[in-house]
Structure formats: C-alpha cells, structure tokens
Length: 290
Image (cartoon, rainbow, N blue to C red; front, side, top):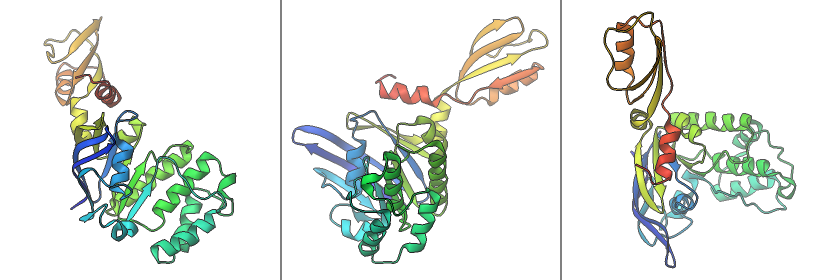
C-alpha cells in the first residue's frame, strides 16, 4: 500500500514556482530519499505532505487521507521534522513531552525515555541553552516518539555528529522494517545510497527522477582493475581500457558480472571492481547534464 502519494502537486508563491506537477508515491516499509539542489522544491513538497500548507493545485495524500483537508486526522500517524527545528525557548525537553501527550492524547513517557537515551539528550535543558545539534535531537525525538506510521524528514542528520547520525539511520531502518513509510531529504548522497530503497529527485520545482537505487546502480560507472599472469587471448569490448604491461584498467557501466566472468576466463590473478559511482550520477542530474 502507498502511504504517501503526490498527484500533480503544485505550489506557487505569488508568481514564483515552489513545485509544479510533482507526482510520486512511497509505499509502507519503504525508505525514499528526496534529492535536489537548494531551492529545488524539496522543503515545499515535505511541508505540503505534512499538511502545513495548502497546495495551489494537485493532491497530496497520507495513509489515504488528504494531507490538507484531513490534516488533523493524520497528525498522530505522521512524524514531521522541519529543516529548522523551532520550539519555544522556555521549554525543556520534558515540557515538550507534556505538550505532545496533550497533542496525541496518549502517554508517551516510556517511548520518550527510550528516545532521549538513544540520542543522549538531557531532558532538563531548556531550548534556549541547546546547541544546534541538541535542538535537532529534540526535533527528531518529537517526530519519532509517538511511533508514527509515516515519517517526513527534512535533512534529519543535519547538526548531528557521526555517532548520532548512525544511531538515527539505524532507527529509521528498524522503523521501515516494521512497516513505516519514510521520506527524507538530504544533501548527503552517500547517506541516501546506503539507506534508501528509492530516490526521488527534483530540480527547479519539477520531478526529474523517480527510481530505485538498484536501477541507478545499473546506470552508474564502475572502475575496474585486472592483473593478468599473461597476455589475455581475447578482449572485453564493452569497456575502455588503459594497459600497463599485464595490468588493465578501465571503466564499465551497469552490471559487472560479464567483465568478471571474462577476467576469470583469462585466468586473471587479481580483479578489483569498485562500487558504482552514484555520487557522480547524482551530481550530473543536479547540473542539468545528461
């Protein structure tokens, strides 16, 4: 079942385009990375899905409900993290818990303790005294504590140190394995590559890519290095090779099984095939390149 659906979603700010005719979906149990350069429309899309803005035209649905018209009905099933966490300065994390207990009409103390322990956040510190990283942790805890079925996060690892980043990513993997649908924007291409099932990319307010990580890997270029004990009898034609004695270096696109099989058939003594360079592929999309 698709937990998040955009259909021809459009938002104008006066005459300026935020996003235009964007359509994609995220299924239950999926982690979808949302990519694009600054100003591409990522935050606008996430706000629309979280029910924080009314679209100009088009529809956004969460768990089958209209994200704008039925925003109060979906609130308890959605965890939203904005690009900049804003909480009243006088609040402590424990004050935020009391607020969320009222919002969600349930007791969240047990889950709150687990989350504050996970992210090592002192619940008695006031927001005014929190660093950027601490505020980010508070925003994440507030978005996760009620165990929502849908997570909509705008750059969730921003401001976190590497240990906390890995803890968050591990938590997201666990949530997805339990059926949560997760859509998050990020400027960390490696993070998206290692965490996500799918990638949606926008540029200048328009959708330019909606595909699986597996499909992207098949488009990406890989570096290959092969060492032969003697000159190979045949050559592998679907690659550009630079030869230095019996060492061959080249690049291939897509599946590496065929070049590996050829190298082994020629009794290669060493074979190194690097991971696909998805970062270069992502960057080319950002720059309007083919």
